[in-house]
Image 1 (cartoon, rainbow, N blue to C red):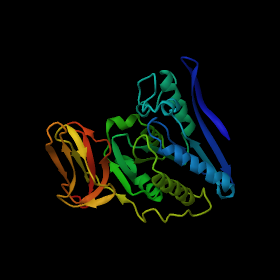
Image 2: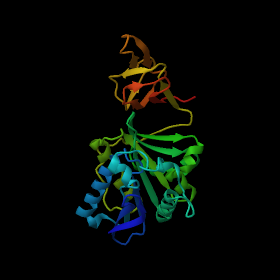
Image 3: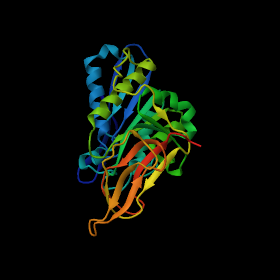
Image 4: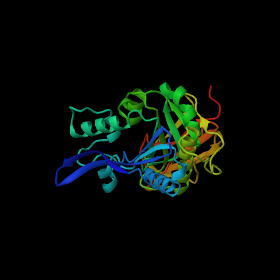
Amino acid sequence: MIKTVVSTGLPVDEEWQIRKNVLTGGTGKMRICIVTGTHGDELEGQYVCYRLNRIVAEHPELLDGTLEIYPALNPLGIDSITRGIPGFDLDMNRIFPGSEEGTVTEQLVHRLMNDLRGADMVIDIHSSNIFLREIPQVRINVNMAGRLVPFAQWLKMDFIWIHEAATVLESTLAHSLNSLGTPTLVVEMGVGMRINHGYCERLVAGILHLMFRMGCWRELPDLSCSPQESVVSAIGGVEFLNAEASGIFLTDSRNNHIVEPGEEIGCVVSPLTGEVLQRVTAPVRGLLFTLRAYPVVYEGSLLARIYKSEVE
């Protein structure tokens, strides 16, 4: 059943609508929500929502509870391939939890929060931006790790990044819902403005596996393409590699493999002079889970992230 969660009029006869598909089956009371499309240039979630809708439609007898699918929190952004909210110059994931007495955008996210509140699990799906390529991963604030890591492991993603608290996270959907007691997992994978079918199919299987473990799906999905166990990070275990000069980043590396100390990941070059401005090498042994996808870089640009195999 398609339901409109929030709707408001906008200039030039436009309308901002957030809609969801509510799928119910069996007698189960579990309620799981799939949320994506917060950023208009992140498209992996569109494929995941499509596949989940198809699977439930083809096998309704396997659903034992409620699955709510919100494919586009920022539909105007998706229509225009714009990361933020067009016309407002806002990152939607920086205005939660919103307010009923606030601006139009704050009112919308406040109503969305009320709609999601109380779910047994919310999965907030993101792609990376156009600059970085990410392996399938779950990101969890250290303050929520004890509660959320067991659920994250059921998603069967390659990496679970437990990161330290940061002020900016307080205005995200996931942080706001977790603060209200609604467990929320953030999934990130791929690269902006693209869809990696393999990554998406793995996440679909992982969501069905989580639903199975929570008693909301009656069949164990095929997990043959998923890792048996996710790598779970420790605090302080992630190394950031940044550009030391402006230029073009060239690499033949791929992410999602173990690099050794001194292994070359790429180089920053100058098209003007033909110089190699920086040879980018791994400072430690570990999992290369983030790699620069967009080649133009400036001093300080993020080139890669490595999770150290041994954390002191």
